[in-house]
Length: 116
Image 1 (cartoon, rainbow, N blue to C red):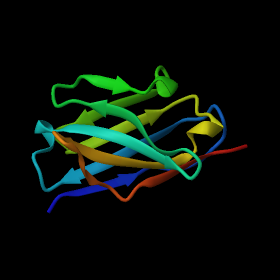
Image 2 (tube, rainbow, N blue to C red; image 1 turned 180 degrees about the vertical axis):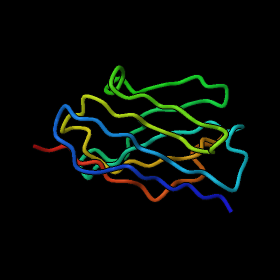
Image 3 (cartoon, one colour; image 1 turned 90 degrees about the horizontal axis):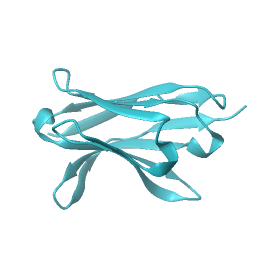
Image 4 (cartoon, rainbow, N blue to C red; image 1 turned 45 degrees about the vertical axis):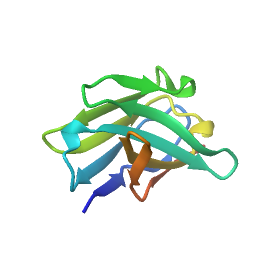
């Protein structure tokens, strides 16, 4: 059974940092591209970042230079380092497995709230 379990969210002040983790199991993690997506009531779903199986990384423009995606294949864990957080980054953050036809498995999400 494929499982993705996010953790690390919380309340942080603007300019602060968080690191999100996504523990993956039930599939060959190292062979798969992985993605972070966020959702807010006002903006809907937004693709944030992706890391390919070969380690190549991609970011949406609004987080470039502030967020860093990484993976530890030995631990089967995906990470997202969030720096210089803004109120606009407030969202539920999900990790998902990227398949050929889209994101086929999702975690339950972890809430990030940026507020003073």
